[in-house]
Amino acid sequence: MSTQLGTLAELPQEYRDAMTRVGVAPLWPQMRNVLPHGAPVPVTKSHLWAFADVRPLLLRAGELTPVEKAERRVLFLADPGRGPGAMQATSTIYIGLQLLLPGETAPAHKHTPSAARIVVEGEGAYTVVDGDKLPMHVGDLILTPGGCWHDHGHAGNAPVIWLDALDLPLFVYLEGSYAVEAPLQSPRNRPDASEVEYRSAGLAPVRRRDRPASTAYPMMRFPWARTEAALRHLAEHNGGEAIELDYVNPETGQSCLPTMGFTAMMLRAGETRRPPQRSASAVYHVVSGRGSTMINGATHHWGPKDTFSAPVFAAIEHTSASDSPAFLVRIHDTPLQEKLGYYEERAR
Ligand SMILES: [Fe+2]
Image (tube, rainbow, N blue to C red):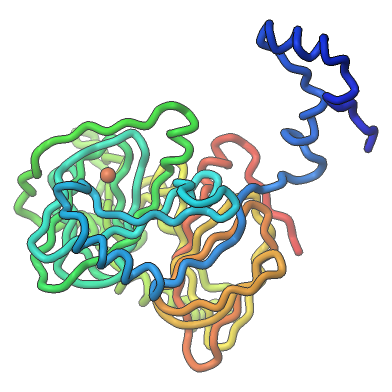
């Protein structure tokens, strides 16, 4: 099992030079790097980005760079395992914090990667997705799936900050990432689907043969007020189990984006939870509450609006502060791994 494989240094220099000239290389010296035993060896290093640290830099970007010069005024979270400038928080997940000032607009574009926003601070902003105007309240999850036109506007009177989550690293790796730009959209004059067709969990518009359900992305906005109410209600009735809800496509019950999944979690006051070791990587965003999370032995202390990452197969232990519950959104790449047929959970 643990046979020591040959190294490059064991090969004659003239043979190595000859391989280089022809454009080939031996697999065996690198075999264990790409196929380690038992579990992957993640490059991602768990990290906590405190909102209090990022916020002033983001507001400064508002002074330094007009939105027209940025298109999207974003500071992205760089995984320390990949070094400064790494445009990924984990292997597959890109996270940015975006600032929109009152009166500003971010022009329409669409792109191959899918995105979701979680509103972090401020009221009055909105996103228009394929003509649907979606209000942005703190904690709301808003989808902009790949290929859907989206632009942003802000009718409030204080800065708005939201978190962007994209499967951008995957699309860059696939050499499949690009965008198309357009002027601002004219929104339809009606509330979005979360206020009309999909108002209640388990209730969907009646299926009609002459008007089949649109199953790809039927609902783009998941209002936080409803999510938090559902978590609190579940907490009262689930017999002390972990309180976590999946954001799903209300027509299919499947993940709401192709590669990224989202769950809303509640930790009761003073509760400790040790989820299984998952093959998926994750980014956690704290909507409200305080606590700490130990990831592979290192402890992150978190508060409202902080964001932290966990690599694949991480040993995780969440503990909320003893005086109030905590609410977090977990962004993960389980749907991608399920499609590839290798998603796994290991009991601890
Ligand atoms: Fe975009």
